[in-house]
Image 1 (cartoon, rainbow, N blue to C red):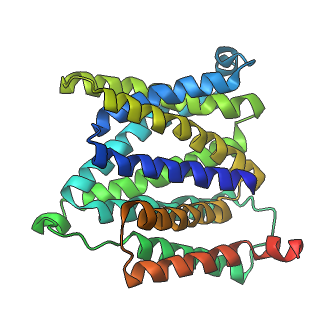
Image 2 (image 1 turned 30 degrees about the vertical axis):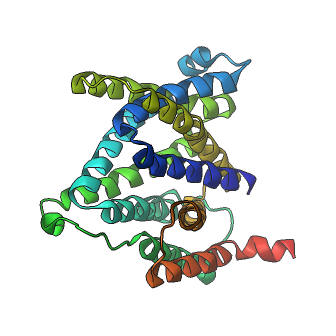
Image 3 (image 1 turned 180 degrees about the vertical axis):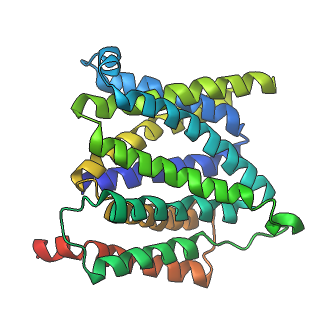
Length: 297
């Protein structure tokens, strides 16, 4: 449970970084590329006594999976940015967060690795978690473009939905079948090296001078971003790779804390539907983890 909590906290810190970018005028693409460099450095420092190159060379299947995920990471980020610009923040947020349905379905019906028996309360919790994520993500945006909901523009949020779900599902599958102790810490480094190289090429072609604020923003994002993958891998192992339970709890945990911090730090107002979503999220957590709660009483 501790790794789940740590994963939630570092993801919330990532959310706060992104919210601060607009306030301080940070170039998002530049900060993202610096973030990937900071991720790699953080991972290497975290390994300390280990030899990451030797672990990588001995890694086998998970090494090329990490490389492919690096490409998917940077591609998903670009699509999320374009979706936000073309369709709106709310649609991009819903597409990203609702993508947890993909690893949940994959875990339940294809991996079939849950060590505990799923009961009706667990399944109800999954359904409530999806409803909670949808309700808390919906925001009414002023000045949204008229063309926001035409069929052509909806290709982008659908792509974000599929790619985000693919990332989570692939991490879950890779952790179950290919990762070992040393590989758990090196796997995120492989992902961020590839994403960083592709991102640097993109920054080069924009030909905009690198801003100091982008470097600072990238560093403050990169440290928690590395641990967001590392702690996720550790949390999956702690939950016996049962993504059907972990991913809903992870997402609603992030949403509850992020929503409350947005109210306190950014003066964001929650609409009645958002408040209902938070209430459903709390209930979903209780239903998803009711076996653990009863065992602790």
